[in-house]
Length: 407
Image 1 (cartoon, one colour):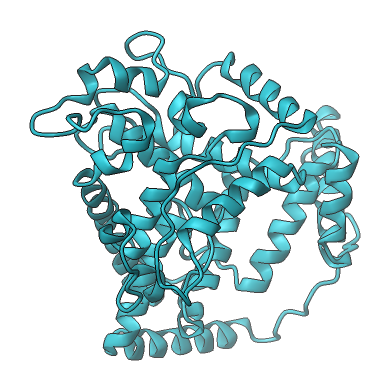
Image 2 (cartoon, helix red, strand yellow):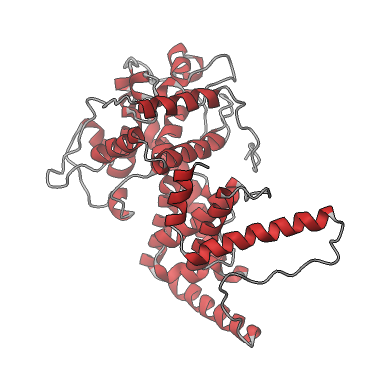
């Protein structure tokens, strides 16, 4: 990690988080030393340099009280129709603004309240920033902590006790409802896009006859070209369809008309694709209380763009026909976008602004803003980013996943 990035990370953390990270690194170093000396049976006890809260004298009573409280909340919340709707909206929002396959992550029952999850995430990030010579927390571990915090952000506060409860009865209903809704909505969203594929790609030089009737993307040379296929089952992680008008420079990656249209269709309805009047009532943007895109939403649009061109019959983590590892690429894209935003890369901020300007137009006009031109800014900083991308494209495609791709 460069000095600027480390400095920014430290500025966003309080002293408690820093001490926790340092203690974590110190403990890991100690374990390594003990293993090298074959003294695992006589570990050295380190002083707790971080501030800790005293444990209650009667932990059994405290646990019982917490469980009773969570059980009461569980009973009351799921009877109310509005409360159930709030859970469903959160599950949908998590798909677009959290992780498209968040339901495959272990987010519930982690025993972390919101403050503890935040402290643990900050400490983990700092540990990863330090060159301590010990094994660093995995990217997936960091991602899970980030998603747990998104649950706290998206769910009404009344449901918060159910997120961190450690006994199944206290959170199982919440988990099942959210997982069921999240999984179902993935298919619903994709089917919505399928019906408007021709409109979504009309600015990408795709003839209007494409995507009609029995058209098979998997056999079409133009779709293969947009997907960056080099040969069957071999593809580029940064294909032309993810760049402005296929113009491959670092400054335009993810800045596409198709990506904007996908999010407009999802958040405002398909009529807005024709630049018609926006109806806010009952639209996902209103129900989910969203007013801006984030790195995950842009990545969702990028993954759907590739899927619609692939010819894959179902939207799964790995395409059955194309062989595209959508899940691995999704997580890779999110990491790349967030990394560039942390580095204050101008082109990525321009891309974020580009999406927000078109997906969330000024409400005084209530008119969708059709994408006409894509601003392209070329700077030395952006060209350096593009050099990084080209280097990454030469590396092996990430295929090691923690799920069964046949699901």
